[in-house]
Length: 253
Ligand SMILES: Nc1nc2c(c(=O)[nH]1)N[C@H]1C(S)=C(S)[C@@H](COP(=O)(O)O)O[C@H]1N2
Ligand SMILES: [Mo]
Image (cartoon, rainbow, N blue to C red; front, side, top):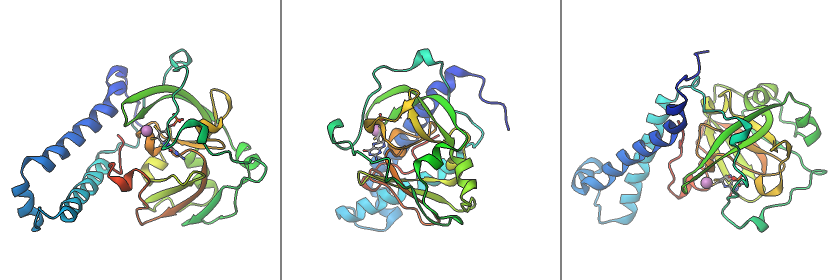
């Protein structure tokens, strides 16, 4: 593996700055010249649906660029425990009191798609996997970021354990609150992508995603599903709750 980035200052700000740059470039393309867009797309841009389709295709093109520049060995900044943000913010598409209450006794993680061992996983079985911890920064697209400590199993270890097809393109997630998202396989296999069960050394509270949150420090907050109930491996992009409403799908560094 390549030596991790030794310039902490840059890696601290790089992910967001990169995203902002990419998005800005995309925005310029979107807004600069509708005339040029018309020529590119060959469609009448007074038609709202046609415009949306062109913008959608550009965002998906942008996904490809971001995937191409993704460095599987580049690590997100890790922090000392003293840097942890207290209290850690809650975010979801509803208020904190409405966070789903998942029953640990009956919980079973469902697996489907391009996975050899599809038997569902109880929490006890998941907790028995080798556990590791990480103090990283969670960056929300809404304009806040916070440092937190999450613990769980390296997602790559879990995917290998269940015989997931690691050459497939995507891993999709379904959550207890109807949220859903998906990530690219290189990000799923990144050494800092963790299937986490604990926040701040205690079982994840409901607000932060009990019984599990997929923690991906190389991606924006909305690509980190909480309350994961089911996951599947596929070659068809499954999209996501915010992604399908126009947020850029890759949203990472
Ligand atoms: N199941 C589920 N996961 C989710 C969300 C959600 O609404 N439901 N929101 C996402 C967004 S936008 C953010 S910023 C983080 C917030 O995580 P936190 O509440 O632990 O800070 O969860 C992400 N994962
Ligand atoms: Mo977010």
